Length: 260
Length: 165
Image (tube, rainbow over all chains, first blue to last red; front, side, top):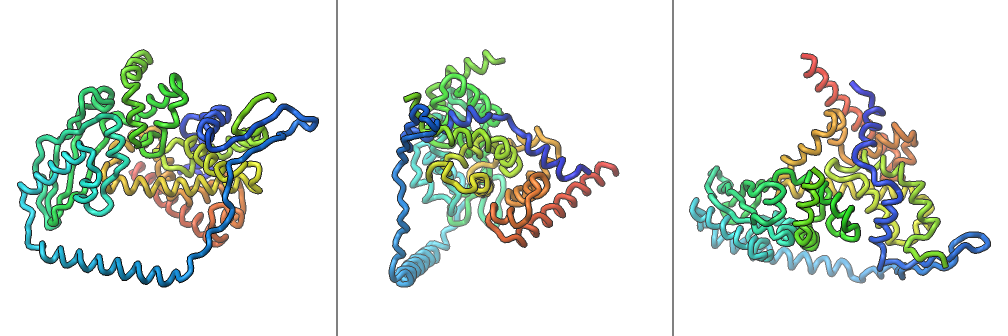
Protein backbone atom coordinates (compact mmCIF):
# COMPACT_ATOMS: atom_id res chain seq x y z
CA UNK A 1 0.00 0.00 0.00
CA UNK A 2 1.38 3.39 -0.91
CA UNK A 3 2.04 6.01 1.71
CA UNK A 4 -0.46 8.82 1.97
CA UNK A 5 2.12 11.53 1.33
CA UNK A 6 3.23 9.76 -1.88
CA UNK A 7 -0.36 9.53 -2.96
CA UNK A 8 -1.00 13.20 -2.31
CA UNK A 9 2.18 14.22 -4.10
CA UNK A 10 1.18 12.11 -7.08
CA UNK A 11 -2.28 13.70 -7.17
CA UNK A 12 -0.76 17.18 -6.85
CA UNK A 13 1.08 16.70 -10.14
CA UNK A 14 -1.96 15.79 -12.22
CA UNK A 15 -2.91 17.71 -15.37
CA UNK A 16 -0.98 20.02 -17.62
CA UNK A 17 0.43 23.18 -16.12
CA UNK A 18 -0.56 26.54 -17.49
CA UNK A 19 2.26 28.38 -15.72
CA UNK A 20 2.03 31.76 -13.99
CA UNK A 21 2.63 33.84 -17.12
CA UNK A 22 -0.26 32.37 -19.02
CA UNK A 23 -2.41 32.54 -15.92
CA UNK A 24 -1.67 36.27 -15.70
CA UNK A 25 -2.67 36.70 -19.37
CA UNK A 26 -5.97 34.95 -18.69
CA UNK A 27 -6.59 37.04 -15.59
CA UNK A 28 -5.87 40.21 -17.56
CA UNK A 29 -8.46 39.28 -20.16
CA UNK A 30 -11.06 38.25 -17.62
CA UNK A 31 -10.70 41.34 -15.49
CA UNK A 32 -10.58 43.82 -18.36
CA UNK A 33 -13.59 46.08 -18.30
CA UNK A 34 -14.29 45.24 -14.68
CA UNK A 35 -11.23 46.73 -13.22
CA UNK A 36 -8.94 49.55 -14.29
CA UNK A 37 -5.45 49.83 -12.93
CA UNK A 38 -3.03 52.21 -14.59
CA UNK A 39 0.53 51.37 -13.79
CA UNK A 40 2.96 54.18 -14.32
CA UNK A 41 6.66 53.96 -14.97
CA UNK A 42 9.07 53.54 -12.15
CA UNK A 43 9.13 56.24 -9.57
CA UNK A 44 12.11 56.79 -7.36
CA UNK A 45 10.86 53.91 -5.29
CA UNK A 46 9.83 51.93 -8.36
CA UNK A 47 6.32 51.35 -7.11
CA UNK A 48 2.89 51.75 -8.59
CA UNK A 49 1.66 55.33 -8.40
CA UNK A 50 -1.89 55.44 -9.73
CA UNK A 51 -4.57 52.93 -9.01
CA UNK A 52 -8.20 53.19 -9.94
CA UNK A 53 -10.22 50.34 -8.61
CA UNK A 54 -13.68 49.41 -9.63
CA UNK A 55 -15.95 51.06 -7.09
CA UNK A 56 -16.75 48.72 -4.27
CA UNK A 57 -19.67 48.87 -1.97
CA UNK A 58 -18.64 48.41 1.57
CA UNK A 59 -21.98 49.21 3.12
CA UNK A 60 -23.65 46.28 4.75
CA UNK A 61 -27.28 46.20 3.63
CA UNK A 62 -29.61 47.21 6.36
CA UNK A 63 -31.23 44.26 8.00
CA UNK A 64 -34.87 44.22 6.98
CA UNK A 65 -37.18 45.07 9.78
CA UNK A 66 -39.97 42.77 10.68
CA UNK A 67 -38.15 39.89 9.08
CA UNK A 68 -40.25 37.47 11.05
CA UNK A 69 -43.41 38.99 9.59
CA UNK A 70 -42.09 38.55 6.05
CA UNK A 71 -41.06 34.97 6.80
CA UNK A 72 -44.50 34.22 8.22
CA UNK A 73 -46.23 35.71 5.16
CA UNK A 74 -43.95 33.75 2.81
CA UNK A 75 -44.64 30.56 4.75
CA UNK A 76 -48.39 31.16 4.53
CA UNK A 77 -48.18 31.75 0.77
CA UNK A 78 -46.08 28.60 0.22
CA UNK A 79 -48.38 26.53 2.40
CA UNK A 80 -51.37 27.80 0.41
CA UNK A 81 -49.68 26.97 -2.89
CA UNK A 82 -48.81 23.47 -1.67
CA UNK A 83 -52.42 22.92 -0.62
CA UNK A 84 -53.71 24.05 -4.03
CA UNK A 85 -51.25 21.77 -5.85
CA UNK A 86 -52.17 18.85 -3.57
CA UNK A 87 -55.87 19.39 -4.34
CA UNK A 88 -55.14 19.64 -8.07
CA UNK A 89 -53.14 16.41 -7.95
CA UNK A 90 -55.95 14.78 -6.03
CA UNK A 91 -58.46 15.80 -8.70
CA UNK A 92 -56.29 14.57 -11.59
CA UNK A 93 -54.91 11.61 -9.69
CA UNK A 94 -57.04 9.08 -11.51
CA UNK A 95 -55.59 9.94 -14.89
CA UNK A 96 -53.14 7.10 -15.62
CA UNK A 97 -50.24 7.52 -18.00
CA UNK A 98 -50.30 4.65 -20.49
CA UNK A 99 -47.27 3.26 -22.34
CA UNK A 100 -48.30 5.08 -25.53
CA UNK A 101 -48.79 8.32 -23.64
CA UNK A 102 -45.36 7.93 -21.96
CA UNK A 103 -43.69 7.70 -25.37
CA UNK A 104 -45.68 10.71 -26.59
CA UNK A 105 -44.59 12.69 -23.52
CA UNK A 106 -40.94 11.93 -24.28
CA UNK A 107 -41.43 13.01 -27.89
CA UNK A 108 -43.05 16.23 -26.69
CA UNK A 109 -40.05 16.75 -24.44
CA UNK A 110 -37.76 16.25 -27.47
CA UNK A 111 -39.84 18.73 -29.46
CA UNK A 112 -39.61 21.32 -26.67
CA UNK A 113 -35.86 20.74 -26.53
CA UNK A 114 -35.50 21.32 -30.27
CA UNK A 115 -37.74 24.39 -30.07
CA UNK A 116 -35.60 25.79 -27.27
CA UNK A 117 -38.73 26.07 -25.13
CA UNK A 118 -37.11 26.03 -21.72
CA UNK A 119 -40.28 27.09 -19.91
CA UNK A 120 -42.15 24.10 -21.36
CA UNK A 121 -39.27 21.77 -20.45
CA UNK A 122 -39.26 23.00 -16.89
CA UNK A 123 -43.03 22.63 -16.65
CA UNK A 124 -42.95 19.02 -17.80
CA UNK A 125 -39.86 17.95 -15.85
CA UNK A 126 -39.70 16.47 -12.39
CA UNK A 127 -38.52 19.03 -9.94
CA UNK A 128 -35.01 20.27 -10.66
CA UNK A 129 -34.18 17.86 -13.46
CA UNK A 130 -34.00 20.35 -16.31
CA UNK A 131 -30.49 21.52 -16.89
CA UNK A 132 -30.93 24.74 -18.84
CA UNK A 133 -27.16 25.16 -19.30
CA UNK A 134 -27.03 21.84 -21.14
CA UNK A 135 -29.95 22.82 -23.38
CA UNK A 136 -28.54 26.27 -24.18
CA UNK A 137 -25.13 24.81 -25.03
CA UNK A 138 -26.77 22.33 -27.43
CA UNK A 139 -28.59 25.20 -29.13
CA UNK A 140 -25.44 27.27 -29.40
CA UNK A 141 -23.77 24.27 -31.06
CA UNK A 142 -26.79 23.75 -33.38
CA UNK A 143 -26.80 20.11 -32.27
CA UNK A 144 -30.61 19.83 -32.83
CA UNK A 145 -31.00 16.45 -31.11
CA UNK A 146 -33.70 14.37 -32.72
CA UNK A 147 -35.29 11.54 -30.75
CA UNK A 148 -35.98 8.36 -32.73
CA UNK A 149 -36.97 4.80 -31.97
CA UNK A 150 -38.45 5.62 -28.57
CA UNK A 151 -39.58 2.50 -26.73
CA UNK A 152 -40.56 1.41 -23.23
CA UNK A 153 -37.73 -0.46 -21.53
CA UNK A 154 -39.20 -0.75 -18.04
CA UNK A 155 -42.62 -0.53 -16.48
CA UNK A 156 -42.49 0.08 -12.73
CA UNK A 157 -44.70 1.39 -9.95
CA UNK A 158 -42.93 4.72 -10.44
CA UNK A 159 -43.97 4.92 -14.08
CA UNK A 160 -42.15 4.00 -17.26
CA UNK A 161 -38.60 4.17 -18.48
CA UNK A 162 -38.42 5.22 -22.13
CA UNK A 163 -35.23 4.76 -24.16
CA UNK A 164 -34.61 6.73 -27.35
CA UNK A 165 -31.83 7.10 -29.88
CA UNK A 166 -30.69 10.70 -30.07
CA UNK A 167 -29.44 11.82 -33.49
CA UNK A 168 -27.37 14.99 -33.74
CA UNK A 169 -27.33 17.37 -36.68
CA UNK A 170 -24.71 15.96 -39.11
CA UNK A 171 -23.04 19.37 -39.41
CA UNK A 172 -22.74 19.87 -35.65
CA UNK A 173 -19.62 19.47 -33.51
CA UNK A 174 -20.93 16.28 -31.96
CA UNK A 175 -21.57 14.51 -35.27
CA UNK A 176 -18.40 15.72 -36.96
CA UNK A 177 -15.94 15.15 -34.16
CA UNK A 178 -17.62 12.71 -31.77
CA UNK A 179 -20.47 10.48 -32.80
CA UNK A 180 -23.66 11.27 -34.72
CA UNK A 181 -25.87 9.74 -32.08
CA UNK A 182 -26.21 8.72 -28.48
CA UNK A 183 -28.91 7.01 -26.42
CA UNK A 184 -31.05 8.66 -23.79
CA UNK A 185 -33.03 6.99 -21.05
CA UNK A 186 -35.94 8.96 -19.61
CA UNK A 187 -38.33 8.34 -16.71
CA UNK A 188 -41.98 9.25 -17.08
CA UNK A 189 -43.69 9.18 -13.71
CA UNK A 190 -47.41 8.47 -13.11
CA UNK A 191 -48.10 12.23 -13.20
CA UNK A 192 -46.61 12.43 -16.69
CA UNK A 193 -43.55 14.31 -15.53
CA UNK A 194 -40.17 13.62 -17.01
CA UNK A 195 -36.80 12.93 -15.41
CA UNK A 196 -33.77 12.20 -17.55
CA UNK A 197 -31.94 9.10 -16.30
CA UNK A 198 -29.05 9.33 -18.65
CA UNK A 199 -28.04 11.21 -21.72
CA UNK A 200 -24.40 10.28 -22.23
CA UNK A 201 -22.34 12.90 -24.01
CA UNK A 202 -21.21 11.95 -27.51
CA UNK A 203 -18.13 9.76 -27.69
CA UNK A 204 -14.78 11.43 -27.14
CA UNK A 205 -16.27 14.63 -25.75
CA UNK A 206 -13.57 14.78 -23.07
CA UNK A 207 -10.81 14.60 -25.70
CA UNK A 208 -12.68 17.05 -27.95
CA UNK A 209 -12.81 19.46 -25.01
CA UNK A 210 -9.04 19.34 -24.67
CA UNK A 211 -8.56 19.78 -28.43
CA UNK A 212 -10.93 22.76 -28.41
CA UNK A 213 -8.97 24.43 -25.67
CA UNK A 214 -5.70 23.87 -27.55
CA UNK A 215 -7.23 25.20 -30.78
CA UNK A 216 -8.68 28.37 -29.26
CA UNK A 217 -5.54 28.99 -27.29
CA UNK A 218 -3.46 28.78 -30.46
CA UNK A 219 -5.75 30.68 -32.82
CA UNK A 220 -8.23 32.77 -30.83
CA UNK A 221 -6.91 33.27 -27.30
CA UNK A 222 -9.34 36.14 -26.81
CA UNK A 223 -12.23 33.64 -27.12
CA UNK A 224 -10.75 30.97 -24.87
CA UNK A 225 -12.44 32.20 -21.73
CA UNK A 226 -15.82 32.09 -23.47
CA UNK A 227 -15.61 28.37 -24.16
CA UNK A 228 -13.73 27.26 -21.06
CA UNK A 229 -15.62 26.48 -17.90
CA UNK A 230 -16.40 24.00 -15.22
CA UNK A 231 -19.45 22.34 -16.68
CA UNK A 232 -17.86 19.36 -18.32
CA UNK A 233 -14.49 18.38 -19.78
CA UNK A 234 -13.21 21.87 -19.05
CA UNK A 235 -15.93 23.42 -21.20
CA UNK A 236 -18.57 26.00 -20.35
CA UNK A 237 -22.14 25.01 -21.10
CA UNK A 238 -23.50 28.33 -22.30
CA UNK A 239 -25.24 29.36 -25.50
CA UNK A 240 -22.46 31.80 -26.29
CA UNK A 241 -19.78 29.13 -25.85
CA UNK A 242 -21.69 26.80 -28.18
CA UNK A 243 -22.07 29.55 -30.78
CA UNK A 244 -18.36 30.43 -30.67
CA UNK A 245 -17.41 26.77 -31.18
CA UNK A 246 -19.93 26.39 -33.98
CA UNK A 247 -18.70 29.52 -35.79
CA UNK A 248 -15.13 28.15 -35.83
CA UNK A 249 -16.06 24.52 -36.40
CA UNK A 250 -14.64 24.12 -39.94
CA UNK A 251 -11.36 25.62 -38.87
CA UNK A 252 -11.28 23.48 -35.75
CA UNK A 253 -11.86 20.30 -37.75
CA UNK A 254 -9.04 21.25 -40.17
CA UNK A 255 -6.77 22.13 -37.24
CA UNK A 256 -7.41 18.80 -35.50
CA UNK A 257 -6.72 16.89 -38.72
CA UNK A 258 -3.49 18.82 -39.27
CA UNK A 259 -2.41 17.92 -35.73
CA UNK A 260 -2.91 14.25 -36.55
CA UNK B 1 4.08 55.76 -18.58
CA UNK B 2 5.41 52.27 -19.36
CA UNK B 3 2.28 50.25 -19.81
CA UNK B 4 -1.35 50.00 -18.86
CA UNK B 5 -2.57 46.87 -17.21
CA UNK B 6 -5.45 45.70 -15.10
CA UNK B 7 -2.89 44.00 -12.87
CA UNK B 8 -0.38 45.97 -10.85
CA UNK B 9 3.23 44.82 -10.79
CA UNK B 10 2.98 43.74 -7.17
CA UNK B 11 -0.08 41.64 -7.97
CA UNK B 12 1.74 39.98 -10.86
CA UNK B 13 4.61 39.14 -8.59
CA UNK B 14 2.25 37.76 -5.99
CA UNK B 15 0.53 35.58 -8.59
CA UNK B 16 3.95 34.29 -9.69
CA UNK B 17 4.83 33.45 -6.11
CA UNK B 18 1.55 31.83 -5.19
CA UNK B 19 0.88 29.89 -8.38
CA UNK B 20 3.02 26.76 -7.79
CA UNK B 21 1.62 25.92 -4.36
CA UNK B 22 -1.97 26.80 -5.31
CA UNK B 23 -1.72 24.73 -8.48
CA UNK B 24 -0.65 21.66 -6.51
CA UNK B 25 -3.31 22.27 -3.90
CA UNK B 26 -6.02 22.62 -6.57
CA UNK B 27 -4.87 19.40 -8.27
CA UNK B 28 -5.47 17.48 -5.03
CA UNK B 29 -8.64 19.23 -3.89
CA UNK B 30 -10.47 19.78 -7.20
CA UNK B 31 -12.73 17.20 -8.85
CA UNK B 32 -10.93 15.01 -11.35
CA UNK B 33 -13.08 16.36 -14.18
CA UNK B 34 -11.85 19.92 -13.60
CA UNK B 35 -8.48 21.24 -14.71
CA UNK B 36 -6.55 22.43 -11.62
CA UNK B 37 -5.45 25.57 -13.51
CA UNK B 38 -9.09 26.51 -14.07
CA UNK B 39 -9.75 26.33 -10.35
CA UNK B 40 -6.71 28.46 -9.56
CA UNK B 41 -7.74 31.02 -12.16
CA UNK B 42 -11.30 31.18 -10.86
CA UNK B 43 -10.06 31.62 -7.28
CA UNK B 44 -7.82 34.50 -8.35
CA UNK B 45 -10.63 36.14 -10.33
CA UNK B 46 -13.01 35.93 -7.39
CA UNK B 47 -10.44 37.35 -5.01
CA UNK B 48 -9.45 40.15 -7.38
CA UNK B 49 -13.03 41.16 -8.08
CA UNK B 50 -13.24 42.09 -4.42
CA UNK B 51 -10.16 44.30 -4.58
CA UNK B 52 -6.41 44.24 -5.09
CA UNK B 53 -4.78 40.95 -4.23
CA UNK B 54 -2.14 42.82 -2.30
CA UNK B 55 -4.80 44.05 0.13
CA UNK B 56 -5.36 40.53 1.42
CA UNK B 57 -3.66 39.88 4.73
CA UNK B 58 -3.35 36.15 4.11
CA UNK B 59 -3.71 35.67 0.35
CA UNK B 60 -2.68 32.00 0.37
CA UNK B 61 -5.25 31.10 3.00
CA UNK B 62 -7.97 33.13 1.26
CA UNK B 63 -7.27 31.60 -2.15
CA UNK B 64 -7.08 28.08 -0.76
CA UNK B 65 -10.43 28.54 0.89
CA UNK B 66 -11.81 29.76 -2.44
CA UNK B 67 -10.46 26.63 -4.12
CA UNK B 68 -12.04 24.36 -1.51
CA UNK B 69 -15.39 26.13 -1.83
CA UNK B 70 -15.28 26.09 -5.63
CA UNK B 71 -14.45 22.38 -5.54
CA UNK B 72 -17.37 21.65 -3.23
CA UNK B 73 -19.68 23.57 -5.58
CA UNK B 74 -18.31 21.64 -8.53
CA UNK B 75 -18.86 18.29 -6.86
CA UNK B 76 -22.43 19.30 -5.98
CA UNK B 77 -22.95 20.44 -9.57
CA UNK B 78 -21.66 17.16 -10.98
CA UNK B 79 -23.86 15.14 -8.66
CA UNK B 80 -26.87 17.23 -9.66
CA UNK B 81 -26.06 16.85 -13.34
CA UNK B 82 -25.48 13.13 -13.02
CA UNK B 83 -28.87 12.84 -11.40
CA UNK B 84 -30.46 15.24 -13.83
CA UNK B 85 -29.90 15.54 -17.50
CA UNK B 86 -26.64 13.84 -18.35
CA UNK B 87 -25.04 10.65 -17.15
CA UNK B 88 -21.44 11.63 -17.08
CA UNK B 89 -20.17 8.39 -15.68
CA UNK B 90 -19.27 6.96 -19.07
CA UNK B 91 -16.90 9.74 -20.00
CA UNK B 92 -15.67 10.40 -16.48
CA UNK B 93 -14.02 7.00 -16.88
CA UNK B 94 -11.88 8.51 -19.61
CA UNK B 95 -10.43 10.92 -17.08
CA UNK B 96 -10.07 8.21 -14.49
CA UNK B 97 -8.13 5.91 -16.79
CA UNK B 98 -5.29 8.42 -16.79
CA UNK B 99 -4.62 7.90 -13.08
CA UNK B 100 -3.56 4.92 -10.97
CA UNK B 101 -6.37 3.36 -8.98
CA UNK B 102 -5.13 4.57 -5.58
CA UNK B 103 -5.11 8.18 -6.80
CA UNK B 104 -8.68 7.66 -8.00
CA UNK B 105 -9.62 6.43 -4.53
CA UNK B 106 -8.06 9.55 -3.07
CA UNK B 107 -10.01 11.72 -5.51
CA UNK B 108 -13.16 9.97 -4.33
CA UNK B 109 -12.87 11.62 -0.90
CA UNK B 110 -14.76 14.92 -0.40
CA UNK B 111 -12.76 18.04 -1.44
CA UNK B 112 -12.54 19.32 2.12
CA UNK B 113 -11.09 16.04 3.38
CA UNK B 114 -8.49 16.07 0.62
CA UNK B 115 -7.64 19.68 1.46
CA UNK B 116 -7.18 18.82 5.14
CA UNK B 117 -5.03 15.76 4.38
CA UNK B 118 -2.88 17.69 1.91
CA UNK B 119 -2.27 20.62 4.24
CA UNK B 120 -1.48 18.24 7.11
CA UNK B 121 0.65 15.64 5.33
CA UNK B 122 2.43 17.73 2.70
CA UNK B 123 2.42 21.26 4.03
CA UNK B 124 2.80 20.21 7.66
CA UNK B 125 0.26 22.73 8.97
CA UNK B 126 -1.34 22.49 12.38
CA UNK B 127 -5.01 21.53 12.63
CA UNK B 128 -5.69 25.01 14.00
CA UNK B 129 -4.31 26.62 10.84
CA UNK B 130 -6.10 24.11 8.63
CA UNK B 131 -9.37 24.81 10.39
CA UNK B 132 -8.98 28.52 9.75
CA UNK B 133 -8.33 27.96 6.06
CA UNK B 134 -11.18 25.56 5.36
CA UNK B 135 -13.58 27.28 7.75
CA UNK B 136 -14.03 24.78 10.59
CA UNK B 137 -12.79 24.24 14.13
CA UNK B 138 -9.49 22.60 14.98
CA UNK B 139 -11.33 19.56 16.29
CA UNK B 140 -13.41 19.25 13.14
CA UNK B 141 -10.26 19.45 10.99
CA UNK B 142 -8.65 16.72 13.12
CA UNK B 143 -11.72 14.48 12.82
CA UNK B 144 -11.91 15.13 9.11
CA UNK B 145 -8.29 14.01 8.63
CA UNK B 146 -8.84 10.95 10.78
CA UNK B 147 -11.96 9.89 8.87
CA UNK B 148 -10.22 10.50 5.53
CA UNK B 149 -7.20 8.39 6.53
CA UNK B 150 -9.38 5.57 7.79
CA UNK B 151 -11.50 5.52 4.68
CA UNK B 152 -8.50 5.60 2.38
CA UNK B 153 -6.70 2.91 4.37
CA UNK B 154 -9.74 0.66 4.22
CA UNK B 155 -10.21 1.11 0.49
CA UNK B 156 -6.57 0.64 -0.34
CA UNK B 157 -6.08 -2.41 1.89
CA UNK B 158 -9.21 -4.00 0.43
CA UNK B 159 -7.85 -3.35 -3.03
CA UNK B 160 -4.47 -4.82 -2.11
CA UNK B 161 -6.16 -7.86 -0.58
CA UNK B 162 -8.21 -8.38 -3.77
CA UNK B 163 -5.10 -8.05 -5.90
CA UNK B 164 -3.19 -10.72 -3.92
CA UNK B 165 -6.03 -13.27 -3.74
